[in-house]
Length: 489
Ligand code: UDP
Image (cartoon, rainbow, N blue to C red):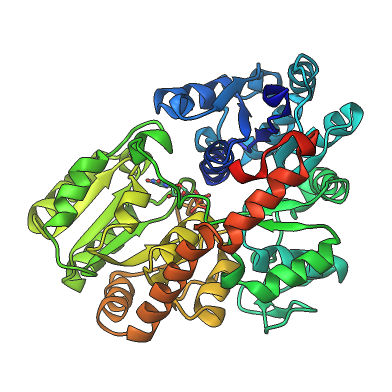
């Protein structure tokens, strides 16, 4: 009976690094607390996770579902957002994902007993019908902060998305988000919420309906970081908000590069750690823009010269796809030669957690993806904020105006991949200035970041808020609760 009573969580991530990584960490957490955790994804992502050894840990199972991107005119390996080549592929990618409903249902039907709970990404609205037809409770996982999600719900309730979209505004004209406990301003291209462009209307409606039909939401944050926004979000959503993070603060014995990884590791965890070991505490600035944003050589040059000019030790992550031109490569090699010993350029995927948790790292120039921002704060590292798109501009407001751990680089317009003829958003002087200010000035930012870091660790320890909430969550979604020995959860 004990075996059948083990609570079983089936996790369905959106296949994009910023969504997949926290779900893998959540699965590890569930498994480490005595639950069974299965992660359902497409073959390419399942292969990457298995190659990284994720399935060898604890009770984590990886289930791959047949996936046919070709039905939507996409190449067969377009199974992760990092394979999306241009804007025209975004919508077909989401539509192809919706085709996973039948194989997902078949997988669930074959499970005896049925799982106790599904946790599906907000974008995976197709899981809602499957869950309800089988009578399985379903939580949704929402990638951003509660601050952002509350902004989105308040904006939606007041028709702000449509109003801003229809206005003949520029990037600098701002609108106040109603109902927020602090002043939050948005502008065209920087409205809160995903899938808000007109072409995505149906997908957004599906996601909002799936959200309303859910049994609550799991968020990668912790109560002490954004308490008033957690409460506001819970009230606006009318469902439990499970703040269980930071998910990544768990013991791990796998290499960070491989187990959370993209296709091409740029450096091993041990090599980068050895390099950082030689640097003074809090002296190194880490520069990386997440898994999606891509820069043209023109912008790379400015960043490189800016870092060189700052005079600070740095670790800079450059994507393979950004180095496609021979000109960029030659330029980079010359920069590496000039900054040898002081600068480390990672070409490809970096072990970001290993970097941010190293004592030598004292600042992060970030695009403000929620994972990156949380990873930085949880390790006590203040940030220079350079948002690109999606929730990142609001995360910047949270970091700078609310939490006081960030310094703006000063961009106002969204950009995912810069147009060929557009001006470069940030010049070398701006980068050098921001880096110097972050590393030399701003003791208050560093102090605040370190204080939040301590609170993050506390939240995940026994007796801490996130730790105890996970216990409650497992107990809530367990069949035959009386058969479970609560002491082991
Ligand atoms: N990441 C990493 N190495 C890289 C690039 C990204 O480990 O070279 C991880 C990073 O630690 C974070 C995730 O990928 O967990 C990126 O998520 P985020 O929300 O910051 O940004 P997105 O990629 O969604 O824009």
